Length: 191
Image (tube, rainbow, N blue to C red; front, side, top):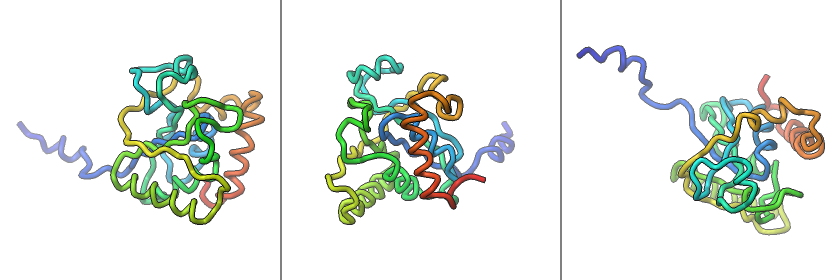
């Protein structure tokens, strides 16, 4: 059997990496990372729980153990995992346990689900640097946990801010975070 065509179509290494982050409502994170240069895909979903194939209604009860997360696919030749985390720590409050603003419950916790030991080490280093710099008056409570599973959220959650910019939550919560991000990271925005 000639496998030369299969070998030619299979890359020797992956040119992208994946980060899975939770920092409150996934609509906010997705809206920011969608605009970041080097990010090729952002999917809203759920990670870190004990229920298979959870849905939004169930996750919102706070009983499944899942966090609302975004799964970010990025090109490390354009943006590093460290840079992904630097953005992450500027667009949410990593010092509030199980909440972001008025969103309260374990599904809104600050969490990094690391995919490799290198991601874990980088996350630990970034958190140490943030704490040493005294950026926040309270300690960082961001959970570090190994990635296990990701369940994409329902279709209506994908690209939510882009598709619903005038929805009240988007106007009051998402839009200000996106504006803050754009101002701080103007040079890192996609053209």
